[in-house]
Figure (cartoon, rainbow, N blue to C red):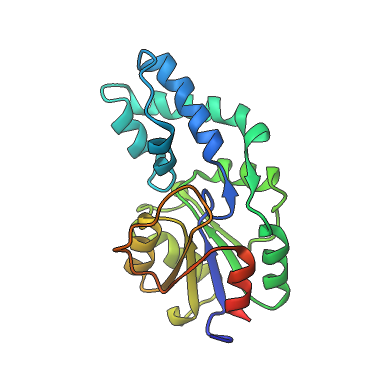
Length: 214
């Protein structure tokens, strides 16, 4: 598919940044503090990556004040970022190579903007992306199509057929479908992709992504 796409938009957690251990450790601390130590299995927590964290906290801590719980999630997770968050293999060199080839790059995430900036700084990807659209930058977060459309507009993509969104779960695919853009789903995280999902294509590594775009 040479030159089919001009704009590449990426999910962050589970796609560019490996934040799984941070999320697991953060949730376990919150379970100990606010759910009498009743922890959800690690394999279940892996799937918290994708939907807005407010939705997850509301499900996991019913009856708690959600603004308080979100502040607690932020407080605990910020301390864990430097110890637990890394970029996926070959992410940085691939992204730099794609940018040098003329692709416009953006992040579309359900993370809040400040956490997105922190994450990109820790994994050494500051300044690579030309657009950052986060949870608090839109009225309707993923799976709504608004965040992808906002990023596409910021990057001057008048033709949505030239836009590819790269993510790791159903939320990402639904967002791409709702925005009317193609979607590639990755398979390098711990989450098993539902076989019923129908992305434009799947990829097993950043190197494979670059090969498909060459």
